[in-house]
Length: 303
Ligand SMILES: Nc1ncnc2c1ncn2[C@@H]1O[C@H](COP(=O)(O)OP(=O)(O)OP(=O)(O)O)[C@@H](O)[C@H]1O
Ligand SMILES: [Mg+2]
Image 1 (spheres, rainbow, N blue to C red):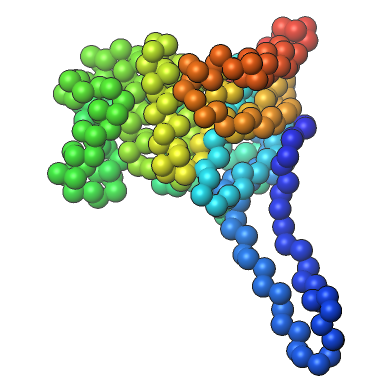
Image 2: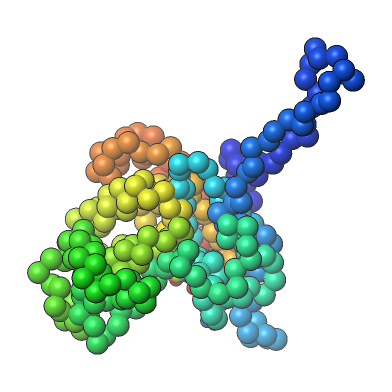
């Protein structure tokens, strides 16, 4: 796996101050600023489903670190052919069965091993999971209720989020009365309202029409810069991966591996304007070529 400009960091040993006579004054230990624990660490993570002849290696030796950089939440996008283990990575990080626990390896969040789901991680799942007996407002407010937030406050906050995702007017509808794209926006609002430190999004915009998709991308960038959370976002859109990602994780299947980590400049413009820049077009084309090289069809392997 190759990775550009990514160093794990560390502390250097204290050194004597040049020019000071040694032995006259007790040497004051040089103060090193304490490095905060990394936000996420995957060390040699493997996951095999099933056993014997039916065993399927979904992930093999996944290694990466997301550092806790001051005042910056990193947005990582993940791309790769179907079945390369993108959802498995997210669900292991979320602590969700049957993907969690990994078969071997170590997963740390803020320096501590993941043992179960927790409020520090919020997942917008590939299959959006709403509660069918609750209306839009109550679905969005549900997590706040579990956290004991008072009814009037949670209804106010839910109303704000319903508006942010463009669903005002549908507050009293039930999931069965909503389109797939509307359900997905409810699921996004229900997770974002909880402001998790780590936001895990599995193809969150896949079922949205192109106009709403662009609006949701902008909303995500805005929220993420306000909240400085770390975001992992899985997408099948190369343009979305490059527009949103500080780093793009490229995965390959059979077995699922992380083959490359690409650093991307943070676009200053809207998604529409960025997409017309020559560097953006070149970056997307290079990533598309790498994706094609890693896809089972181009390697003559059956998925
Ligand atoms: N619960 C499970 N039981 C058995 N095998 C599974 C299970 N979940 C995933 N797998 C297998 O693990 C591999 C990785 O699956 P995963 O869902 O992580 O892929 P993905 O990259 O998210 O694919 P897609 O882009 O289609 O969503 C696949 O071969 C899949 O069949
Ligand atoms: Mg998936």
